[in-house]
Length: 334
Image (cartoon, rainbow, N blue to C red; front, side, top):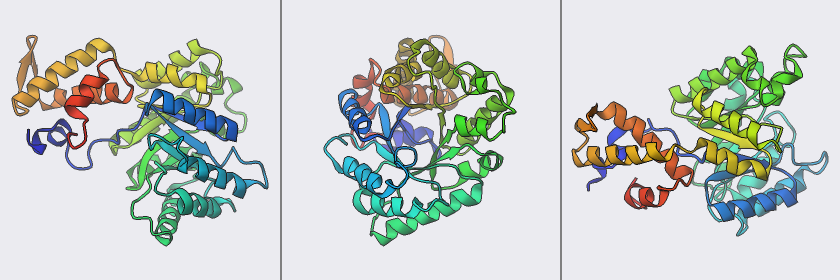
């Protein structure tokens, strides 16, 4: 099989396919919880990312020490799968550049991404990316560190299309709590709840604009938190709404108990995965020409859809993941 016939190569132009990120992004900032989260990732595998938090995790006055702790954990054997990132302070915070210097200087080769919070505009995102790249160059880091950004201000939402188009951005997340607070009480507190965040028009509008911008530019939209972390039913319902109704392909977790329900909710239906495997296998055998499958015609447009199903099954550790991995995701075969 030539490289040109592999699904990603055959179905997408260079740079067209979105990053193949895990469906869950787990945030933690206290050292004991960071270690617990990394241990859980070691157990479950790279079906979720761990974001070590320098912004909300550090006590005031202890920012430098906390950044060193985050760097040490990223360098430690607990980072088994290479899917550990870090959230830094906002670009105009005094700790932003020290965060970068510590994290990139000590653990730049091990960081899967850096999350930049509280951008007020495209200009803030541009400045953040420039500073990240400058610090990386100063430390002779020879790879660009992917940048994720939080959309949680009016200005960032206004510029969301341009932010998603920025070449250094890999993923955009919605910051629910700060976004609601920025409305100065105009959005009731229920807008931050598991149910209200899917019914208030201003909140839903923000989510839709973020998801649409990400899909337009091949980036990954990441859904916000559900703070009722003990309510597994509410969390699962929220995750399914985020995926099925709003177009998000990734979601935040803020408690270890949320990881498994989020991954399960974002996993495709097993029957659809079986269908996708059959269709992509037949399409590949036909060199991507149109085929008939169960009396339905398929061509490259539907192939692309079913390939996304296969990728999601692989990312979530679905029952067919081992078979899928051997066929299409082994080293050199994607």
